Length: 154
Image (cartoon, rainbow, N blue to C red; front, side, top):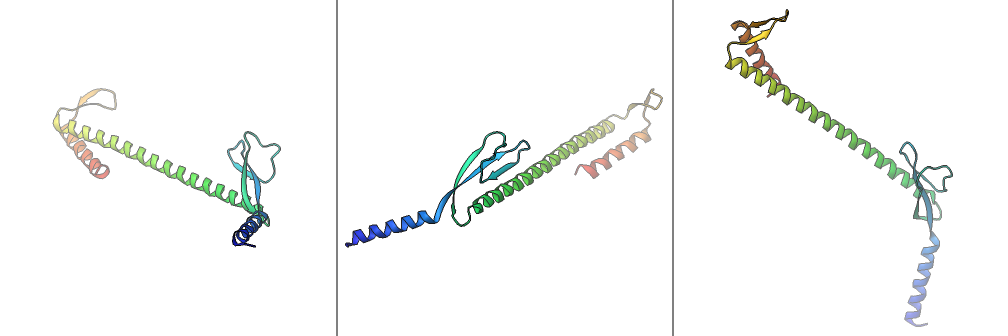
């Protein structure tokens, strides 16, 4: 036998050996009503919605290893997705808290400016009557607004 024939025979043998040691495993994937993704080696009878067939290559010794690997990947994906949603929710809450604090600080600053620039403050007392604020009360309110700004807005 010549070299080309020998190489061809050797390559054919390797190719056939590779085909014999592996097979295509069929795995079915579907999502149930609760949004949970499922994988199975057999076609589900009562699975709702679209069923996707996934062709994978697995050794003939353990075809369910592919199914288990897919399940682990899906679980890891769901865990990452849940963590990302939690982080997004925390970020949204922090943004909202920051926005609320900024609005509160703006209100404190506007109140302080009004109290400082206008010594004749008028307010509604407990009986519902409009009365002029005393200088002592105005100074106390100014100090209070300064304290609130310093504690919450710096």
